[in-house]
Length: 278
Image (tube, rainbow, N blue to C red; front, side, top):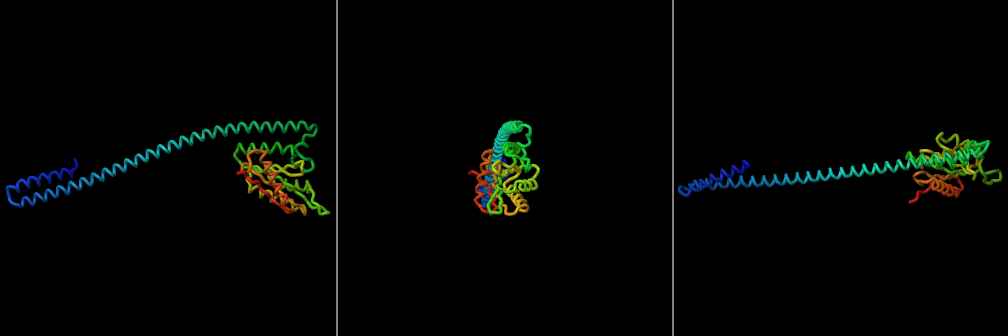
């Protein structure tokens, strides 16, 4: 029992005793009895108030404990869900890597088959002897292999298609000197990049680990290098990036072609960047 309750009980008993004595004595004992009863009531009221506060505090702590338990349970559940998602993502990534590795092997075998079919001079299938740039045959193989590698390693890749023309003596626009263009490309690009000359008179550049802004800056450097060597040259470029604009090789090439077509609508140098599908 609480000590305050014992005090209240003792004071109350004292008041009762004084009250009984007051019946047979003077009024002074009655006054003391009233004071004792008042003191017992005050002590009892104080004890009751403290008890209510204690109960409220206990209830508050109980609510807080329940809230903490629910929070911990929620965190445990979230962690289990996250671990399950990571495991599932890891399995999907492993499957994707395996399929892309198989795809890369197929691309390499196809390229080797085309080289072997070239006969006595297989190098001419891969490298143009006059410019030193890779050919369209090599471009078709390398762009698929590079996109597959970018997907495996989760890195960006940029594809640039270039159309470069020059005004001749009659002020007619014709294809710029391929050798001069090739020289500018090879001097500007990194060893990890790939520059190709296609059968349509265009130039295709594959930029590894390069996002959209890096590709635009590279094209600008190429334009300046070509302008330093040749006069009256116009450079149009279409840029498409993996994975920002497309995930598949066919779509990536298509996006770059659309961007190049938009660039050629301008009379001056122009770099157009592909638009991602919404």
